[in-house]
Image (cartoon, rainbow, N blue to C red):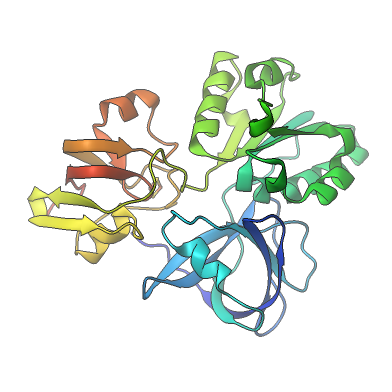
Length: 328
Ligand code: FES
């Protein structure tokens, strides 16, 4: 199942390097003005990766200005190639973009908000911080943001965040030994608080665990992944689907789901970000190690490795799968 998508032509009108590995792009529709968006929204972009047109999602950064879409892309040298393709774009280049979509909406009914960003996961939270700051001034709601990176130079958007949040922003640089006390932060939250987070899968898993252990309502923890952070660098692996006589290699630059679809395997998918679980396939055999990059399967399911989310997860070695598809 593929999402039907309307594409429009757009132009790169400005780029800025925010950190050595994060580049911001202003992208303007070739005709008309950008559609408005809410905090948490993202945009899809079509890119030429390994001679194939592929789609990537990027969060829209900051409040809409009515002129351009703004996204920020971290260059992942061992990724699937989308970020490298984005970094090759120059001012004046044309590309196809979707209208903004939002699966990470902000609910303005809470008395307190905790925003937790890991690395490039800061991007959807920038506008949340700006919007919540204005909301807090009107309603008295309170707000705190934790923003973790590996090195000081990876901290993007600091002036903007400091302006929006002041002392409510706390940064953590792991190479300095600064670590978020997730359990302590959650324990300090008032009843009804909501937590919004985006970052690496390991951080989201730790937050989900701490949230559940604290007895907080699952609905008040809202997250988005960027589905690219695994335990291993992306590398080619073999996949077999005996039911459909498939024996193929998944290239380093392709997802398992894309490779199966290209090979003619009927698959199911929706979010393509490791969140909804629709693409999960049964694992019949595994030689090597699975690199689960989703936030849908439970820790137990990941350890058992009886299922794998084909849209983001990978394998080092080879895997034999069964698809949900059944011929009539
Ligand atoms: S399509 Fe949603 S988890 Fe894979």
